[in-house]
Amino acid sequence: MVQRCQYVQWIGVGLVGCLLGLGGCSSGKAPTATLSQAELAVEEANKSEASEYASFELQTAREHLENAKQAMQQENYQEARRQAEKALVNAQLAETKAEATSARETAAELRKSIESLRREAERASMKN
Image (cartoon, rainbow, N blue to C red; front, side, top):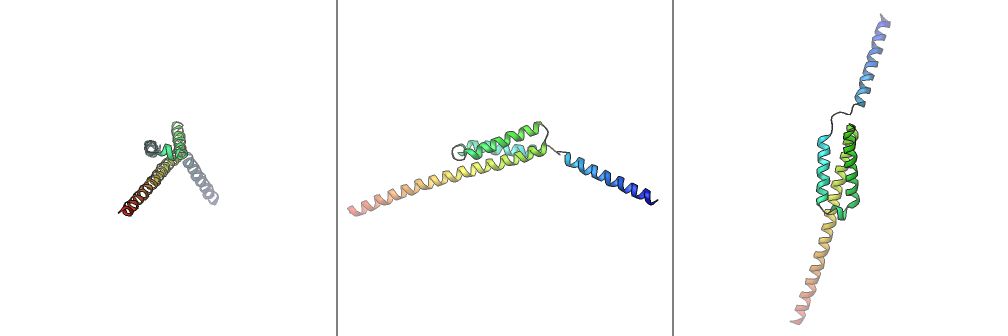
C-alpha cells in the first residue's frame, strides 16, 4: 500500500513536470497588438524629424521591427513580442530625441532673435 502511494506520487510529480516543461515551450498567442503598436511608432518616428536628429535610434527601431516580423513568420511569438517591444521603445526614443533637439534649436534661434531685438532697441534709445 505504501509503495503504491509513492508510485502514484512519483507519477504525479512526473506529470506536473511534463506539463510545466510543455508550458514553457509554448509560445502562446501571437503578439499582433504589440507588433502593430511597434509598426505605428516606427511610422510616426519616420514622419517626424527622427531621421535627421535620431537616425541611430530610428535605425535600431527598424531593425527590431524587422526581427519581430521574422520571428512572427517563424511562429516564435515570445521573440516576436520581445523584438516588437524593443522596436516600440527605440521608435519612441527616436521621436522624443528628435523633438527635444528640434526644441533646443528653436530655443536657440529665439534667443538670437531676442538678443538682436534687444540690441536694436538699445541703439534706438541711444539715438533719442
